[in-house]
Image (cartoon, rainbow, N blue to C red; front, top):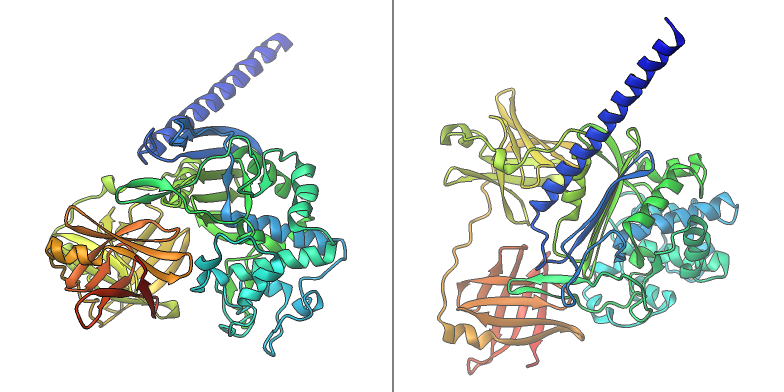
Length: 552
């Protein structure tokens, strides 16, 4: 074969490859855009900035919806969002950087750095803080949390809020996601380095990586291209409640863009900040004292999308929700940032990851039709590990799934045995074993097995309609804690409740003065004086009964 002939064939092959890559990129862009457009981001909704990278290079980057509803500014990749708990990756890597420099060890007891911390006779290590196995009470789960949301606090003042709370379990024996642990980690960084957490992250990470649009969050600093945060109510969107950025601190105070977070992921992949051996500790999950594996490592959760391993983390904070997913084998990174605390951005990014893999999740619109006899064979209770019980029920030829203590959700048949939840990335596979009902429950690629048991489902609430003159008696503001208020309003003969910093929910009457929520498992009882005047309410949620006095 002549040189010219060989050259011509090579040129033809290269042209074909370029055409194939171009066609793939074009199809990928179209498929992702079509999927996100179905999520109804528009000029009347908060926005989403999303980026997909392959081999460290951006192959998709767009904005949807609005970065600022009041000023009619569309969301773009340049917009800066609060990233919430994705901040934990920066905190954990900061700790590992210090360990690699010989300035601490993750096996160190925390009292080596915080001498007066009351460990209640327990041995609590930095490792326990990193992987949420410390047993320390998470301050964001305390009733007093909202009381301090607007208050600027030092790390020591923040730690004082939770340090004397009873331990929830012995360190290393359970996994329970815990923001207090990352507050302590931020303080340890400050003790070891002699500088603020904010300055350490800026100097050693942002500046080093060229993350010029990333910040330790601030409500007073002028931040170019800041996306305004929103919450959703039944009557529309509203500005999210104020939160001092000193409160989430090292657990959730960083702000960034999709483009800067790609720089972050590329630096992690290239071992720019920490070596591979230290990164392995962060991304590959960890173990409890009994040897049981848990998917959380140090700032990353190990998961799975369509058979591909993922390292990921999400974030949720007043006005914002976020999710980042890295697929190491395919070297694909997806980051989604939204300026509303209302949506499920994790479902969006997981679906985009599946599209990028060429294995899109099924949609509920693709559901097949099964008859009542086919559906009825799966009805019943299923017991999963950790004594979690899920009830599958049938109503009007529609199957529902309800985890005890949660709400009822539709599931849709893709085959005679496979059912998905809305979004497609969580599913049931029903089967029988030794004549007994069984179910595989899969979410984020992780599957657990449920065994059929005999247990009746929670009784369905029977709501009633109360006259407007009764509903109007509940209108007002009720104080759970100072600065944590539940507002009750009536619209179109329907009653709505909204707690400080949270979305508005409709509440439904079962009888006079007794109400429940459908959106979350909670109840509200209105309490009256002897002359019949409403003087307070009691919120029942998560096993707690929380009284709130009517203040106006």
